[in-house]
Image (cartoon, rainbow, N blue to C red; front, side, top):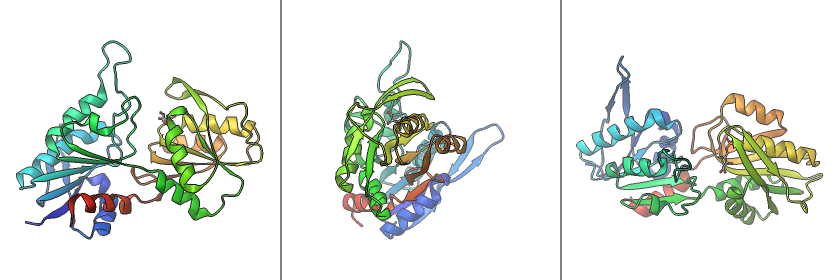
Length: 298
Ligand code: R5P
């Protein structure tokens, strides 16, 4: 039996292949076949003692059941350790019941996944009040990697830093906009945001901040509907920003949302490939490989 290999869910095959190449190990796709009644047959072709199961959890409602079935199949094939690589980790925002009767989805997802896996590796999980992934997944080992370095690398690659101002569109983006700014050695500001609905936010700029004539780069961890970036861009444009672009770790937005971002004045949006998306501009594979090789050996 092999010591380490990768098993990839169907949507993750390109990213898993990049990780396999970066780690110089083998990878095999997990096969799914939908039955006419909506159930799914899940088949793993092989497992190693330590099997990395690659499944980014955007569109989670359709992915979670096949993921658990895949983990079970890998165990049955002899995997002693299953390391779930979920570069985008779903359902982390709802960390309490905001209204009576609401499910605390963060806790539920942790309880659903933990019995099937030994370790979780993710990138920039969307944690609000809970700061530490370990307290969300207390029963398994978990590693949370930062996307800040990759976004800073994208800025450096362009080499067009003159007159650039990094802007975090809300308080939650504060800490890691600062992290990108420090790595890219650029100034930054944080806006304040009030959310009124799924696609409706109000954003304000601190009084003392001048953006006139600036090349603004908006930084957010996740772009879901794009409303946050669009409202921020409209505000920055009104205030005289010369050019506005955006960088994100997790791009979840639709093609229609991308059109709205353009209309709002964002000339380009670039993302990491935690989620396979047309805005992908940099691969997380080398960063994942570094963390996994250190963790698992080779
Ligand atoms: C907020 O907590 C996040 O940092 C993002 O700003 C937010 O989730 C983006 O969502 P949307 O693109 O739907 O505005």
